[in-house]
Image 1 (tube, rainbow, N blue to C red):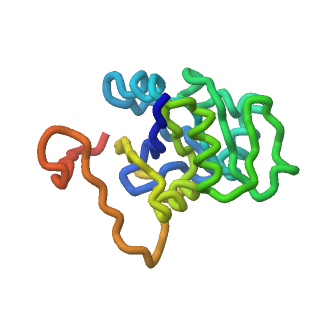
Image 2 (image 1 turned 180 degrees about the vertical axis):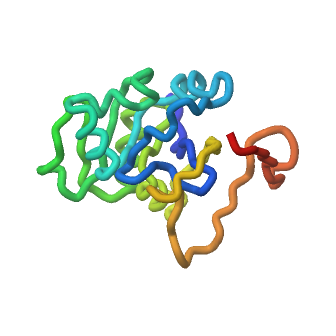
Length: 183
């Protein structure tokens, strides 16, 4: 069995937020991913690694069901939450809490994914993985909304620019041309 990829996959607002204030995700209501995107992502997904802040926000909104929220409940599998304080986490039978280094958490998640991909559901964990070159693929869906505040996609002052090659036919350094008008 091959080893899956570590992927950072998310929707982002036009002004660079991956979640609203308090890790809210309600701003995504009515925003659609492209045809087949969700199905393709679910088909390759073996495990999820998230962070404590996002988990706590979900656990408060969905008591006992936070682990059922990836892809709106359309996916189920191993869910890991990396935290320095697992002892005071709100319990969820579908979540395994990890208190270890981010690289070890990634290895645990990949092993549990059994050859499929490990998806990162935490901007802070993704930042740490970018800094350590642990991410194989980055996929972002730009939503036609501006939030003004919330959880930034990537906040890491002082590092060198991180370049990504676009996965498609054609020039991988070509910028994507997006055009919107006020809805």
